[in-house]
Image (cartoon, rainbow, N blue to C red; front, top):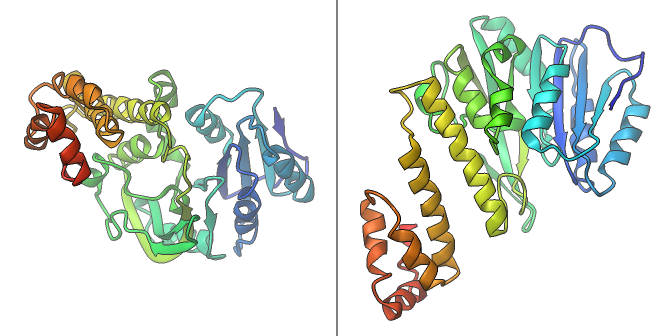
Length: 324
């Protein structure tokens, strides 16, 4: 269901998308930080609420009622997951530019959008720009400066092919770049992340800009999509990650190395790490013998599964964890 008032701005220059699911403690701060932007152009805020079980939806509905000229809501009838939510939000964007902020992150600079649009006006050959950011650790309330490839700019594919260059809350890009991104593939292959494959693909078609100003706060919450807390959720996340890696290797053969063997070993290593962390000797022994062409670190780990006493002693002295 889409909720939009006829007062909604007709020609937004920027569309801002917010994905949210069970984030009642954070979503108000996220929305307020976006609505407080100071700029001389129109923008729309499109919020995708993915059928959560808390008060996030009712909070978003109230914000839409209070800000009908700015906010459009996409309210899902069932929980379809991050990738489906993100894909549908992208299809609703009307702006020339698109910015993004997760429902548990927020912007800390009310000139963020203006700075990014000014960058595009001054650098028309760039299609993507990001900024500096803070990482916030809620358990301790500590802020640290984020370091995700902090000064990478220009042609960044050689970096982006290994992982995201930009924290999602900092990005702004030209909508035209979406023509290169097949979200149906993202959904069908069950990706667990959207930023890595999207940025890798876009970096093949445009230059990335960087504004060092810190404009956003990335909240490192436990049990979030990128930080699952239990074994099952962790493995779903890693399977979705390696599915994205396999897809990119098909799009860019010879430039991104990943095949079924590499994917299988990657997932086995993640299972192995969990087995060691939980002192499950039998499981660790079974898993490590399935790894094909083990790395030097994995060969060292193999030695710790030859004897149960050595396994527990190695775990006790944390020698194993240094190899994982």
